[in-house]
Image 1: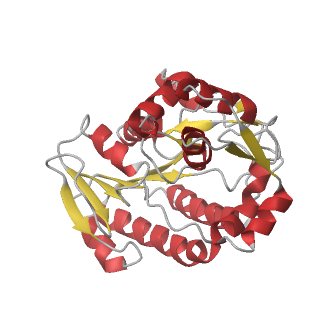
Image 2 (image 1 turned 90 degrees about the vertical axis):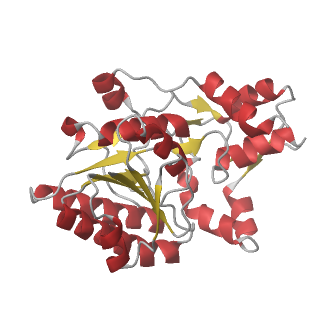
Length: 308
């Protein structure tokens, strides 16, 4: 039995499909779980509830923590440490291996080009400090020798059918509906994105590879392009003009006065005002797997819902 904690999100759905290659028993755990495969076992659970989470892990060999919390500092500060603490405790009790799906918010802002598994942990954002705290919780438990886990990190997402991807929403959706593609800070800085099907495939592989445990992995991610190049590729696939508008930090700060999401986004703008190069060469070398090329990924995203 393998279990996805926080199923149903951008990674959880694809991960459930990929796990069929490794096990016939998959348990999906969330507040409102829905089947992805016909024989999925569904368990309703609030991951902040220690007893409920403990019950959800009974009989499970591997747990994948892929939950996505609302994008607010307050929620992250209150809930992430509790969820990770509960997950670690339940995994240790049931002798379940943990695959923690992570992001890059904890990395030093001045060391984003390139980012490797060895990049300095020194966040300046409040959300980054939460991510650093919970990742360290996992790493500290690994050091005890009584807990097996790995951390799988991804860059910003793009992928078919997902709605919580900035790239999908402000580039694909805008261009398709005749609007200008939005970008942040500058069109000239490099940025790369992790294709969600690649992330799911790699996460499932890591979780089912004994030698992958007790270390950090960057999931396969394409070589970075400039914002201008990304928008041009999407526009070409959609058959539209690559119209763009760039939101400066000042504009986003003003928008944040009226839009809660933009207010939360301001502290993360350092990821857009400099080159952002997420390096996944460790994974690609060990497993001889390359990320889906950008042109092919964009084609799949368009075919999945941006061509209607």
